[in-house]
Amino acid sequence: MAADFDRAAIGYDKTFTNTAIGRGQRQVVWKRLGRILARGHSKQSILELNCGTGEDAKYLGELGHEVLATDISTEMLAVTQGKCRALPNVTTQQLDLTTLPHLSQQFDLIFSNFGGLNCLDSNQLRRFANWSQSHLVDGGSLILVIMPRDTLIEQWYRRFKGDRQSLRLRQSQNPTQVNVDGQLVQTYFFNPDEVTEIFEGYEVKTLKATGYVPSYWSGHWLESVLLLFSRVFSILSIGGRYGDHYLVELVKSTDDVT
Ligand SMILES: C[S@@+](CC[C@H](N)C(=O)[O-])C[C@H]1O[C@@H](n2cnc3c(N)ncnc32)[C@H](O)[C@@H]1O
Image 1: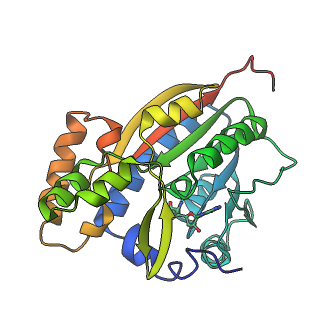
Image 2: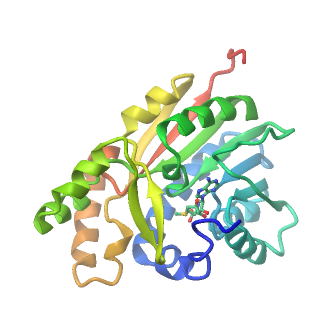
């Protein structure tokens, strides 16, 4: 069955990964990942969810870690396989976050970058929280990068356009239809406090915005001005809920019995 992001696979790196906005946000994630991985041994087992075109799988594989990169989209997985061809420590598997099959392994780190979890509603996210507990080793980390409801620049833009309907929808429990390369994708937004409530069995270690500029500003004449705002917001540590995405690092407690 075709997945929502199949059509986007071919152009995703051009429209997001290789843009200044995409690269800047991924650097923030990699910096944090680097610190977390440095705490453990040199060859950690990593489960990557919604890996997309495999930019992170390649990065983590080149660091020498064992990566199982998963996504619902066979087209996205095909791009990942191409990018990671030279890395025998990176394997791929189709995995649907809404059905969550049991995997026979526990991982040192489970990682979901750039909004894959925004394709789940709050009940599905809750099921994922339980599932991840049983697939992480004690003391293992869950790194989630999620789109919040309150993205500041999105709010300014919608208000400027007089589009209060979109703002209301983003605050509701109903999905927003986001256009991804001509395909409407049902998208749910979660502020950090909702996520930490859902993942209450975990200790929250880090919570920060990865950047403040939504990627649809790429190539716009205002992009560099907005990126300047974003840098100032980062220096001022404006809360993750106002970011385009935020990163939350959750650690499974060592005395947890599941
Ligand atoms: C915005 S892309 C993020 C890709 C990648 N993580 C990155 O860093 O660029 C969202 C990804 O989530 C995947 N996705 C959407 N719904 C999913 C589901 N139910 N199960 C697994 N993956 C899903 C899509 O196929 C897509 O590759």
